Length: 455
Image 1: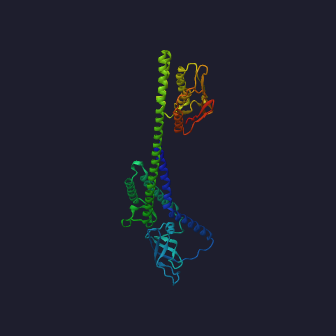
Image 2: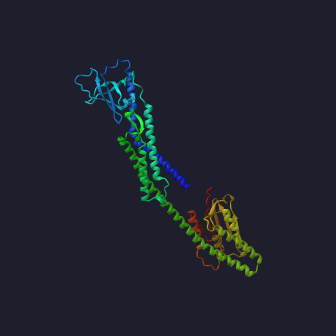
Image 3: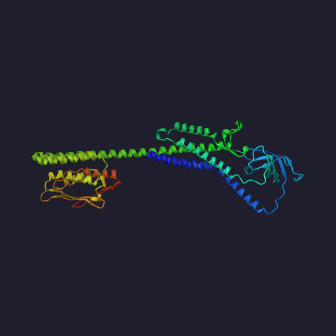
């Protein structure tokens, strides 16, 4: 599931980066397109505003159009009207990209057109096309916007696909086992080869063929190099290579963090196992002492009952001792069985007052929490028929409270404190919270915060 989520996230990021790079490499192209739109709109508006007026007379010229690869061209005039001033020398007439689009001109067309006078010493430029290849053009056609939009669509689609392909090569099937300098260089080489192969299917505008959208491989063999396309492809390759390196470094850092978390979890589990190893022998020896007492008294019925309860408690320890958490209901069932072991020993002298709110039965706590609390209470207090001993187990809100009155023995048994110490350590390791231990002159109280179930 985590691997699938990571792949989806990587794909989304690759798509977003591909969109950004596509817009970046075609930014100048978009600006030119917008400028031509505004120029065409302004020209149309000016023409409409000047319709009532008689258009000024312009010199006319006739010649052959020669288009460059960049879309603009020149007409070499064969015949010029006599309206041109004698001191004006015209060797060529400039034709802009917009005029090529507007009149759908092609390289080699024979054009008769009007001429706008030169500005600042430059060549004169094309005004209106009157005759194209012997065909009269009564009025300028509408600007060919759909063809321009089509070219723009092909440009955007090509560079988006190219960039997404390169990013996929640099990030696909990435894991810690294949993150190395050697494998990174192999990915870079594959990306460069893919860009080289895709170069030959890159779209471009063949201005000499009337502004048609073609592919690089359809160029003439001696002009297969288009520096603008090469530059755009290099930008895409550079971004993909750099992103691949950054992606690998981030992925490696994430792997290190996951490995550290795994080691931390294993360390906590090891500490927990050690604590459980200290609890089990303590409980085991106490149980054997109680059983041996019943055997010495030759009380077969109580011995068998004790063995049944002892079997249940050991089975609970084996099944749940290595688990981190258990439900309050299961822990209370264990408490009752464990308490019966002591009741056999302290007949009519030891009582458990249990008051658990049923709505907290599915809340959790570390397994075997009650064992050290009951064991310590019995170990350190006097239990007689005249002074019966009560252990209270109840819930107050989401807190489990275990308490008992203090009745110290005349001869105190040596205490290592390992029971409460282990209990506190386990709670901190498993839940991240601490327990509250309160001891007064007359009462011993332990407050245990229950954990709400995940569901």
